[in-house]
Image 1 (cartoon, helix red, strand yellow):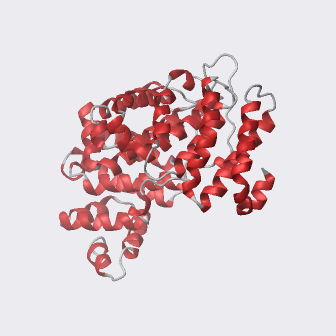
Image 2 (cartoon, one colour):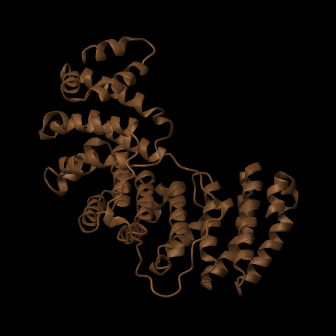
Image 3 (cartoon, rainbow, N blue to C red):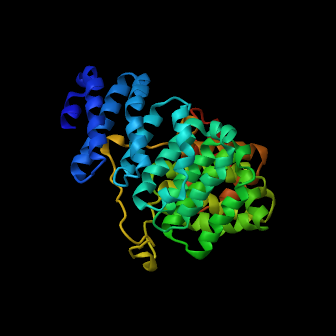
Length: 405
């Protein structure tokens, strides 16, 4: 592994020979995986070979699949538990290199990845979630059209994961990928039940980790489907629930969200609620408009709230009796952080300023009045800075900001 890492592109001409030897060694040790450190570095070497070679020529990924899949198939069929988390990581790495298609060899395996027995082993959960995310990223449309009967199984995995305090964040990773990559019409019949399951978990076992993940999901849903759709699905479950979620969860808890991508998702989602949801301007929800804006500015400017209630300071022991294979992350199978919003929004503060300007144009006089009478002085000062930065000329700043003074 160290030789590969040092030589980098210099080993490319020798990869076909090396891979043949590595796969034979892998097949041999899979019969008796008694040397965990050796096994780990064997898989690291495979990942490094893939990365180095496919960086120079992504098309060579098919050659790796031809060499590795027969061995992986045997490992899966023989249920070599020590190797399954590694196999799923390498498969994720390979699939992520493909363009926006899923090869048939992967699709043939897809139903087997949803089998409950695989998800009973805690060591399988992180790499399996990542692998399913790769399937969704590369072929969410294909799954919706050619494997629609597997969507309930996919959501069943999500349901199992969010029921666990230890693995609920993995359930949200999967759910976020489903929302981001699958066609909206493929999920129409399932969306309400998804939210009901989340509310049941909130009522039965609310934790800080769950709330943070819930906030990211809710705002991603708003970004993907729109603020009106978000408001309607909440109120379809129970009248006025949208307001309750804003008042009891979003406004007081959004300061706990951590991570630059997660904060960006929440910022863009809240901006949509503020500026693209008519109910926020014309119903009982209007009273929440300024507190929500205040919370968003706090997300931008205040330190993260990393406090945890006293009753959450414990080690959660899952109901998984007996031996459990641990998950060991392969360093060279690492995944880049994914931003589902991407370049659509560069600077969320500027995006907020531009969106408020559009709303102010559509509702003359109302927005400046709401801001100037209810927003605290410090938040107002920050907002004026966003507005000023949002335009090269002073036109937007003059029209909007001066009405606040």
